[in-house]
Figure 1 (cartoon, one colour):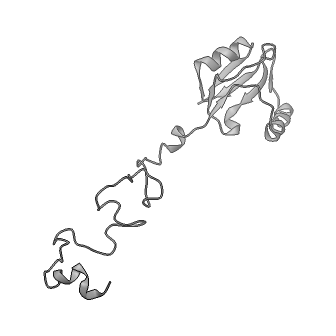
Figure 2 (tube, one colour):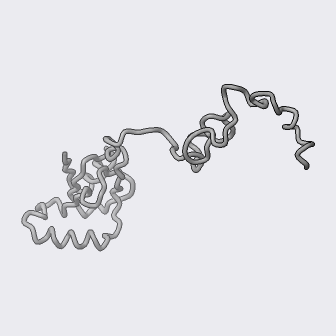
Figure 3 (cartoon, one colour):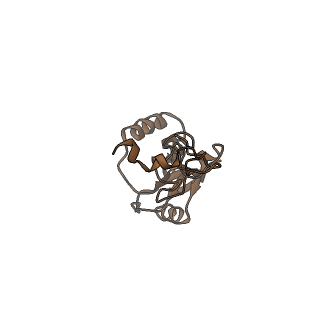
Length: 154
């Protein structure tokens, strides 16, 4: 369409050209990444929708981030990883790694876990000592039923 036929021609000479004096029609109203997301009328996209703005989701303090995102561990009798085997060999060399009748000591904090949950099964004839910051009631019950023990760390 030619310029002379466009509707904007009628608005020439009238200060704000129909966009209002306060909420000015500017090229990029807003801040970083897809500008206008905060200033224009909210459509189907919200602040939690990914890739709509530079910042998304709820603002949280970084001081307590580690405690809330600590991954839980399960008390299943899964096969040991190569790192677990290596640590077990190291532990054997140290004194007192085996608690007489309680079985091997498993320190879950060494593997980046802090909480032991009671999901899964433990063989009844294999007692084990689990060392963790947090242990659920079900996990504690299952470990003790197998003849093991739970050691809480600070």
